[in-house]
Amino acid sequence: MSEVNNFNDYKSKYNVNTDYSLLFGGTPTVSSGGTFSLSDYASIKNGSYGKLLKAYYAKQDAGKISSSKDSVQKSTMIKSGADALKKSADALMDDSLWEKKKLTKKDETTGEESEIEDYDWDKINKAVKAFISDYNDVIEQAGESNSKGVLRNAVWMTGMTGATAKTLSKIGITVGKDNKLELDEETLKESDIGTLKVLFNGYNSFADKVSVKANSISNAAAGSIGTYKSNGKYSSVLSELVSSKVDEEI
Image 1: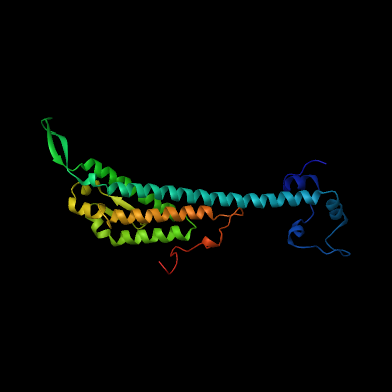
Image 2: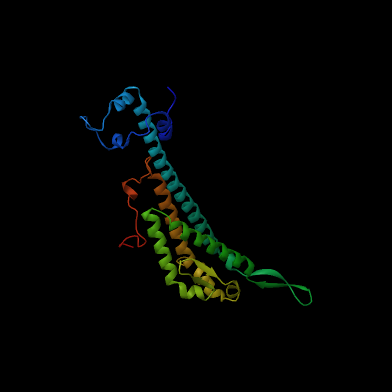
């Protein structure tokens, strides 16, 4: 007998008019004029039904495994993004970024170069842009997560950012309707250094709080990766798919 690998193989090689849904919904009744025919019995006896059942459930299992892999990949991306955000937030808190340095400045009119002492605004601008890019990535990725821990920490982080929006606007950073950050580089370059330091430098600064929450998001994502079962579902630790509000305890 030729091999049966899936439902279509079975349908092309055996009786295409047989209703196979009975196989998966319970035990059929044998009676005169009933649905369990002698051809069904023959198929069971020669092993055809067994092959069909095996192909059917293999397909179901494959779908569950695929779903589980997708969930694991999403959580892995969230963890990676959160780690990148923590790194860029920590870079903003580096004291050396906020110290004046001896820099070479070129006069745009004469072309003459002179040595001045100033903040490295190019480096500051680059650090802030990296931070905003990583922040926005985490917001987008966290929105696709099924992990309650990831969502709770992401909601806390956006709430904290919203509470800091007025101060952020002073340095050219605005919060969009989608909770993502937007930067006006010209405003940033003209910003008061004191305001920048309050936001990005030192303990309990905006950057410090984001760093802490990015670490929490990373840990939550790592935890959700470990709780996926082979059937594509979460274990009881992170079992529920939460709404956009997350829960009432935030």
